[in-house]
Image (cartoon, rainbow, N blue to C red):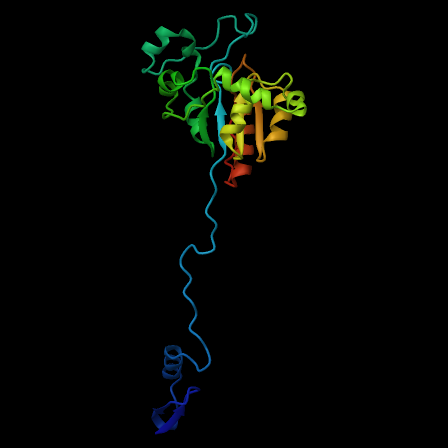
Length: 242
């Protein structure tokens, strides 16, 4: 019977003066070679950066969700109306709510963002609008009291005042709420003055998307919002739908 000498100095007998590779491989695999260290175990997920917060989508109601201002020539029979089975009381109190297409809810929820109401409806958006389109209760952007707005205006520099000339009264509150997070603002009253002020005062990415109030949010609007949000959040974008 022959002897097999391993690289670590140990020996093993082999039948017929030969040696068995399977045994040698097993011995080598079970021993740590001199001068080497066992590899460190890497925990699952180590080195993977946790995703940051999703972008914010500030959503207005009048215009984006409730279209208005269309001409009789364009809408000879008036705007289309919808019934969801949950809107009897709301529609009775405000017949304009019947113009809200319930299809907006699923499309908004499919966007990679945190939805926030940015509307003069305030908390009534959660009470009257959200149930019609299947949205959960959302955060509501609180608008500053007039005295607080006056104090901030007094601290504006000349450049601030120039940039805000003609801008919307919502703009500063949106930027303060976002606090550097990427955001989309969906409204029917956005102007270039708002875009200029946001560009000068917001360090993150921002898309100020104006909606035609006579039509409300359309498929083309959702395509634009989805493409931008997926790009900013780094999530895969689904194929556009009509």
